[in-house]
Image (cartoon, rainbow, N blue to C red; front, side):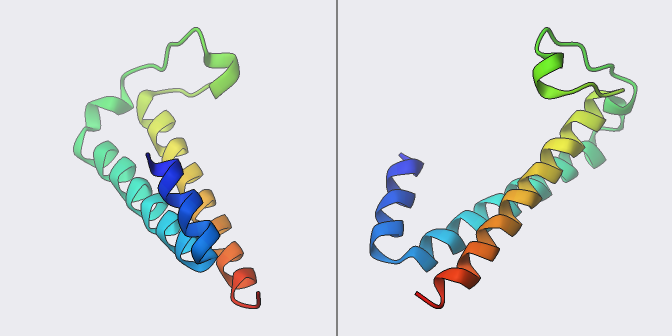
Amino acid sequence: MYYNIFWLLDVIRPKWSCLLNAHFEDHAEHEYMKFVAENPALEQEPFESMFREDYGRFASLADLFRQIGYYERVHKLESLARLDVARFQ
């Protein structure tokens, strides 16, 4: 569903698509960081997963969630950079 909305916005108004995506990514980043802050026990919970090689090695679940939040920030910045380019199109 989200893909279809973003695709349609990208066709109609690429700027809107970039901006909406940046807002989603910003919200996600803050939610991950808030979740870690509100759950200090995650610092002591080891990250164990059979997908560790794919997702990375982290000392704790808190570290994993902080990394995911960081990825959301990177995606937000990519959308904002694309928005700057889209302004000139």
